[in-house]
Length: 285
Image (cartoon, rainbow, N blue to C red; front, side, top):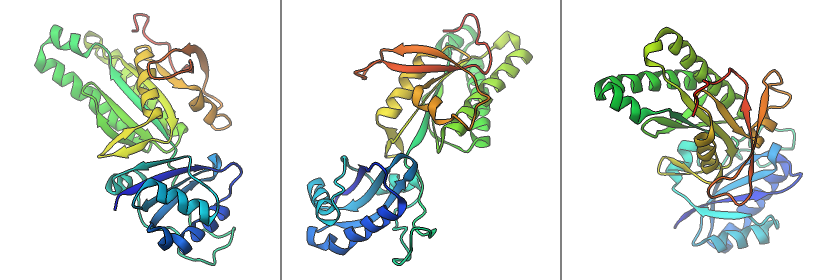
């Protein structure tokens, strides 16, 4: 049978309530020819995800409706192997059916992620001016510095884009720490090698992406890509949701408004903010 991941937004829900709902699903799942594999719950965002085998999406919706009434907001067919790679497991976290609200049973990883795109400025022009061999050397330098910052800040490399990266983080604080570390590395490099300066633009968004065959998809991924394209070379541009998420945690960071951007694929203008880590290059674009 196909594997589906559904998403529920239940305002004010608690982990205990989600554990109870999960057990209710398990009790009657056979009546709907559904096999619930596992679930995740992000209490801070009142969002739950359920992974299940089902004959179709409607059978999964009907199960939830009859079991507890928490009908999913969306249901997507997925590859379970990529779900495991992204979220860490596909087995059921509930080990103790008598676990109470204060129990540690059912502790689960959030599906909500911060998504970052990086882009090396003028990579094609570098190859034309310096030749393919030198350009490849500089690309390796770029890759090494980016990956070093990523490793130091608990991020995950999803893929390279030729002259940039798609990166994933559990929280916005790690994403911004990584973005700043990347830019600081390039600033230091440019001071040491002024004849071959490299500039990177970075865009960060956040949301609940879907992973399929090792890649990430969804609105948050598209938004991060679009924001990266609008960032200044040497700059870090973030969606409002990212700036808001770190309030109280990274209060030392300063931002300046980038205004409202009209981005391809988005119906409404998007509020963006530039991280004031360092004044970008005056020729930045």
